[in-house]
Length: 297
Image (cartoon, rainbow, N blue to C red; front, side):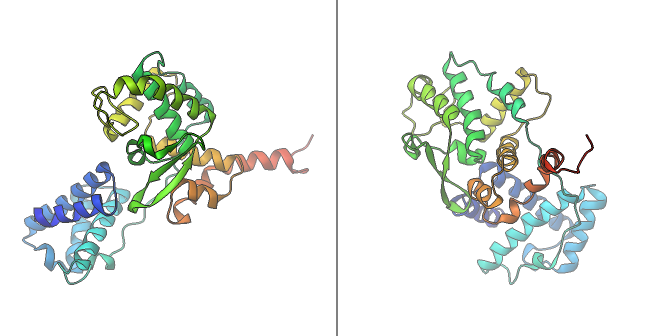
């Protein structure tokens, strides 16, 4: 069992370029399914449609999982069995026959621009870690990149002259992201001082921890948690929430959906369309401010 799972996780890491966080989530979902199979006396390579329906009932009735969680687990297993089928480990992907429960679509949470400005004021740029933390915030917002993409940025990936960075995204797909003057100023400050003081091990990576090693995804989340606690912003924070803010603010500013798709590195525009719902308030404001019969004088 472990060999099969490890083979799949290696595929996600080295061929699909998934982050350690995402791979960990896949592992949890797959191991849970294997434990269920063991409990029921079933073999992973002999699973039938009826067995999966019973597994979904188990998740719903015994585990008390909500629909979105069940759907995520089903998606993980569908991808896993697709890999097994391609590798001829199983005859077919039986999970392709099963659809998940309907889930309520949640709009992505994001920060208003004035809230981000409060966060930018928190890092103490008089020391190396403060310079790094400010750049981390600025670069997440300026580029809209994923946290896994951010921590893998190397100095050699940055073109300071053109203010862009070569990013290695999902599926080992490369794209260039741009950054503006605020991020450029934070970058130059960090490279001219803090980076040199932190880089005691000659690391090629841009974001380093206190030991001079590459910053991890967990490290980024820890830094963001500390920043939000020191600010006046009463919201939870995550790297992806800043990415949502990047996309939302672009659309509210008039950027077209296809351009936002390319900037985010989405393979399909369907993944980008969720942000159109977020901009409803902006459209309402434009309507009432510009349509001549929207309101009486």
